[in-house]
Length: 152
Image 1 (cartoon, helix red, strand yellow):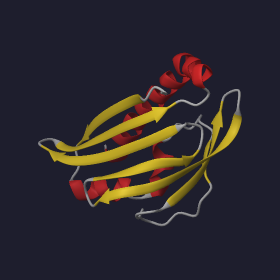
Image 2 (spheres, rainbow, N blue to C red):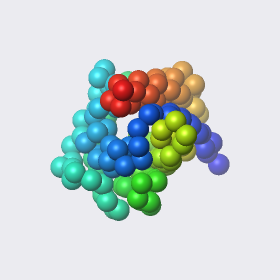
Image 3 (cartoon, rainbow, N blue to C red):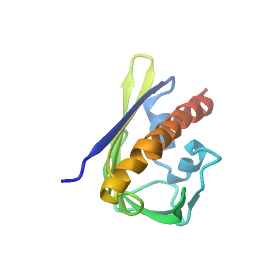
């Protein structure tokens, strides 16, 4: 059975729930929270707001592999609370990303919880150990900085 890895990120921003939801429900804002040095392009025509079943196609650059298509489906939207994006096609064997926001005393807490499985068996495990885990942490560190700038 392949190993299911997890990534968890939390961030509290001084804003209100409505403003936070307006930001995360727009798929176009993904560009704002993605590192500039990352090969990442949204290929799909995107609506102003996500909806159940929305398919979002990206091109992502993967070292030593090149550019690859990533197709995600938006699921399980709970207005002003949470949604899931799940990879249908892409670099991972499994990618399940649960996004949640909640009102807290000092603003709004953004929570990302990701479950993923690397492809390629033992080769994927090596790639994760030497690159993928660090890169995912770097991407989410950048998102924290970008969100602080945006809402600051």
